[in-house]
Image 1: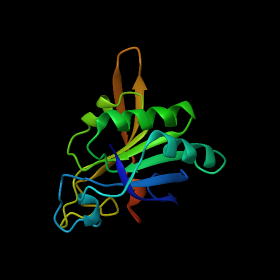
Image 2 (image 1 turned 45 degrees about the horizontal axis):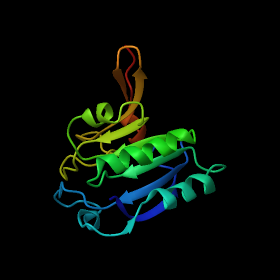
Image 3 (image 1 turned 90 degrees about the vertical axis):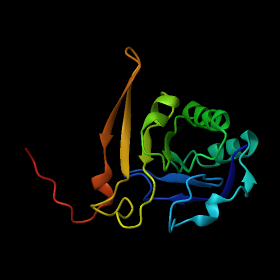
Image 4 (image 1 turned 180 degrees about the horizontal axis):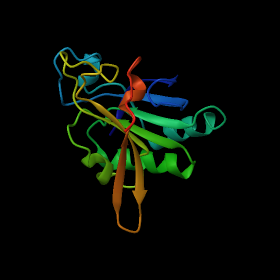
Length: 165
């Protein structure tokens, strides 16, 4: 079961997208000074398929991307919700605190964007130039079953100069 604490329309979780974001509870990472420590608990409303489908239909003229701020602890349910998004032609994003990007392979073809990396206070979040966190756009090659990752972290950071080579 996946539970969410709140949901809202957001504009900053994914660059250039209007998002329906769900704050998913039951995060097992317990990052020091986490900005949302309440999401470490297993509580909130169940995000079942009936309720989720209502959001999908209600948002179809407003939202371009569905964002899961956390994964919860039910990968089968998350896969099902991501699949429902894809059937309605929404883009999808998962924010995860895990270090690697294997989750992109786990959910092959179902995730368009992914934020990876635990919050480390002294490094800062995505907006910090010293962050350990990364935000990627995923592109799938179905012939070779591979995923290409384009790092878009810089889009969260103001006044960052990009050097051209």
